[in-house]
Image (tube, rainbow, N blue to C red; front, side, top):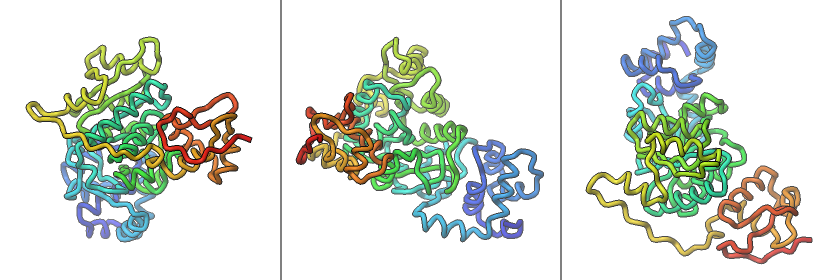
Amino acid sequence: MKIDEIRKLNESDCRLVLSWISDHLDLHLARTIQARGSKVALESITLNSAARPSERRRISRLNQINSINEIKEYLTAKEIEYLTPESEFWPEQLNDLAAATPIGLFVKGEKLTLKDQSVAIVGTRNATSYGARVTQDLAFELANFGYTIVSGGALGIDVIAHHSTLLAKGTTICVQANGLDNFYPKANQELISRIVDNGAIVSEYPPGRPPGKSQFLERNRIIAALAGGVVVVEAPKISGSLSTANHASKISRMVMAFPGEVSSDNSTGTNELIKTKQAEIITNHLDVIELLAPLGQLPPEQKEISNHSVFDRLSDNAKLVFETLPLRGGFEIQEIVNRSGLDRVEVIAALSELEIFSAARKVTTGWVMDATANIRQPALPDAC
């Protein structure tokens, strides 16, 4: 894209181009946009010498753009919208990030969800049974009180928070660290597709951009800013969820944490947050609601809980795998693949979902249906 073509663009279109060509959060570029506008910022990229690799990649991508309409047509084909701070649908709470406010947001799903009253639930990818249970209860109950649940779609605490929200027929937002043409992680593709239908997935990165370490850290600030408060369920001493908590503190969001066993590595980070008074200690969803409700304002009313069974609310793949599992004996993953017709990644994701809701468990001989599950059971297959 040449300089004369850039000068014909409006501010929102210039932001779209900047998002399209940028690798990561660039505070210098962001400050230029805030001070002088996105068109001046885009023009400066074409005029300045590219010293850093990221700057050279930006110029290379810019030169590959034939027209702004080409980008818009591609987004339309992928059912992805692009929001800028000038848009009426822009979640204004993101502006609390100041210079770190995203240039724009790519959105797939219901964009109005981004303005909902929300709570972020984050934590380790290696959740313990304690962390899983706490997250399941918290997300389910907060969703029943009308809160939208924000998380990052990662394995562990994130995926449990999203699953539990969907189980409660609630709304959830997944902040991705990559372009929205491919969902990450691959094992959660079906879950993220369901989030699109019951909320939204968002990213500051354009389609085609793969996830990277810096992107995961950068997206944490968006999780923190979208929500009215951040709950850290489980976190070891070094954890991306602590980064989210840090971002939340900087923009005056309420940070909350569940206490954990002092001997558990997975609770080292959360216990430290509480000990150093960086987070409020909580033990259930009512604590969260009380802390987030403005002074003198009553908390939102709890929604009527549907009497539909857990089975009715599972994903199609999880239902299929559940119907495949025996009560005794156990099936290994490959056997479930053969019987269900799903691929290995889909089976692993479905088993994770079933395990979260105590509908399946791993035994020495493989996977079995949990006979104690509070779930409507279809005809039960025998292991053979």
